[in-house]
Length: 213
Image (cartoon, rainbow, N blue to C red):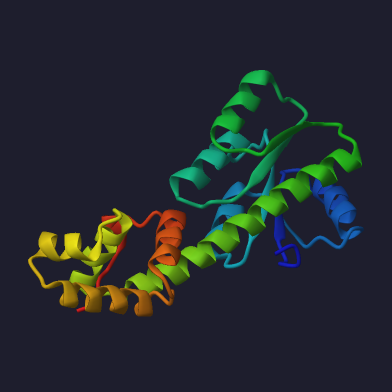
């Protein structure tokens, strides 16, 4: 996972600050995109497909960093980020952390502290991207199940035996075994215990599935 390329988006209304940060990240071969406009950053973030993270300035004339962070949260844009500020204070840092910021650096800062913070949000971005890919693949497999197989999946999740499944749904144990086998095959697992581990990992919920006809 560490070899997955992560793009670092930097938002600051001071071009000279952006230039210095880009130079620092370029020196360690980290890809960057810079924005002096928070709205331009949001527009770009909506279109981004691969893993990304962000560095936000706290004080900007168009939109404050905290307002920008809240906008990202409101739009469901799951972007790991941290703040830079020459005017940072404890309330701002607390608000940023409560909304999910990974860090808060006060200007001026040491280059290594900045690189450490960037590496932290890059690691988070890789982990979240990997989880999204895994979840999408799982949902694609779930979508292959019929309505009855969805019910059998829930029964397996709840630890019911084949006889208990048969009684609950008014079917024969043999029919229940057939449904169970189809669920395992469609979800590409070999055993019920393996399936239960997957269910626990993905926390399948009734509203998240679109059963096949």
